[in-house]
Amino acid sequence: MPLEVDASNSCIPAACNLAALCPPLPTANRGEPCVLDGHGGRINGDRPVLLYSSGRLVVVRELDGELTTGDDDGCGGAESSVAKWKGGIERPARVRAFVYRGHTAQVTAARFSPSGCYVASADVRGRLRVWSYDNEEHLCKLDLATALAGPIRDISWDFESKRLCLVGEGSKTDASSLCARVIQWDTGVSCGELAQHTRTKASSCAFKPNRPMRIATGGADDSRLLFNKGPPFVRVVGDPAVAEHEHSRGSVFCVRYSRDGTKVVSVGTDRSVVFYDGKTMALLHKMTDVHTHSIYMCDWDSGGTRVVTSSADGTVKLIDADRYEVVHTWTVAADRLASLGQLDAATSSTAGGSGSSSSISPPTSPRMPMPRGGMQMGCAFVKGDVPVAISLSGQITLLSTSSDMIPAADAVHLGSDRRLSGHQAAVATFAIDPATQTLYSGDTDGVICAWNLAAARAVGRCRLGGGDGGGADSSLMDRVQGGAITSIVCVGGTIVSAGWDDKIRFGTGKDLVMERSVKLEAQPNAMAKGTNLICCLTVKGALVLKDDEIVSDGVISLPYNALSVCVSADDGTVIIGGEDCKIRVYKVDMSQPSSVVLKEEHVIENGHLKAVHALELS
Image 1 (cartoon, rainbow, N blue to C red):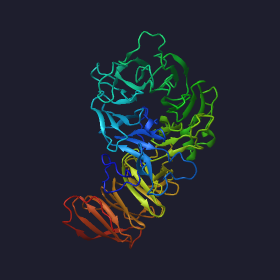
Image 2: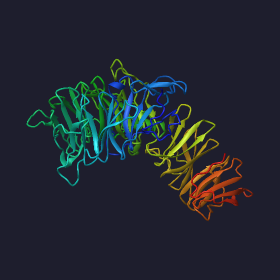
Image 3: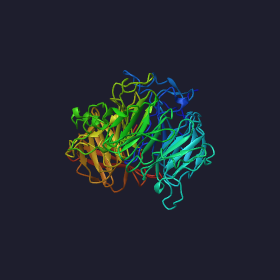
Image 4: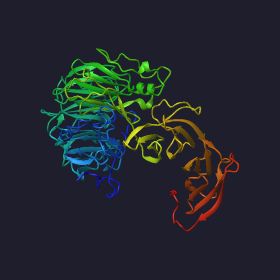
């Protein structure tokens, strides 16, 4: 029987079969690494999956459709086709992700067990949950409400899937609280006492994937990498070979063991990449100034010969772990700016290095500040040794590779970078353009995303074009409104959106550029369209628009608080629902095209006992 609905997690009624699922993008915060897991464990060893957090959700995203070559849309064939998922369970082919909703606070880290059967996830309140991934009910095996007193920043499993290491922040008022713990995965019982970092703040941890067992933890304030042995685990002290102070300043954002456990790599604020011996923690090599800004994340390929790093300078770099040199640089932020026509394409071409950190210009010119949305906050290798990067805007980039860069025999090589788009914030409204079968959705961050309904995948995000004199958006955050988007309509191929920045913006669905805008006198509540006419409700009254212009005489004052609206197909009737539980029918008087008037014709009373929040004509 195909798995069509996850009854324990989905808010969709079980009677409605799930045909497609487009997951949210990862949550990324400035100055904090975005924890990713692309290994998937043994149960997922035959397909590429990416595990990440998005708000209060944990997302397991399948990338097999994105890694196909040619013109395949990744739908897996007909809509009725099914694909194998999670240990042989079948599901509709366009359901490309599983979303876990077991947390009540923002999730900060999630990691697969080496077996792939369980996932450990943690949130900002210090809660740790270990739950089943290969079971349809996704039952929770362990729930620790206060595993740490503060946010948990990273999680690591031992190679036996029996122990968990978790690091984060301790209490700000209790100096004896812990910032690093190692526990049994099913009971939560401690397996020793890990070394604690200064100010009880740790940012990353890694379990050695074989015996003898070791745990390395990175500090968030003390720039140290602490080494623990066990079980039971205790700090390694008195050994002069242990290199704890190789990072010169700031945080050690990420520490990771190679797959065979022979090496450890760490990155941090000082822009250096440091390699250690996996057993003794002795320093092997230190690469300085690999990036021009802080390095947030690193990961090893399956062969243990390549390390990928991501940085706030907008680049992702591939390092040869045997020769300790950069072999390739992806200028993700510069490539995006060049595609938008905001940067010379020659500056943004990818480049390889031989014995140097980079031979390419920085991703921004001296005249242009670093684009916030181009900062690369996380990276990982997924199945097939495909490097994946996450930007601050949340967009996922599958990076192009070649056999020279990733020599593994089973590696998957992409000819060009592929960007996966979507939403980071809650979707507030959407509209469909029937002519092109495109859905436009707007979220509470002011982002509009276009979706191909046939393929059930994101086409891209709308962006500001600067046609209204405000200038094009070069931050790469893709926010077309200054606040939450309250409504979107499509009229004759034009996208019209209203948001809490008190503006209505107009754009074209062909190139997804919002070129024009109209300033409102008040905050918009709702918007609806007929064939050519648009009615927008604000907290002060109603506006009528046609051909991208306001055709009413300013705001039409209403003696009630209007909440919902719909317009007839002939543009002759406007129906408005109010907070007073009444529905009012207006006739559109267009005798003077430059001063359209709404004339009240009928009031429907006693139909609702509560405010009318939605209206639609058949």
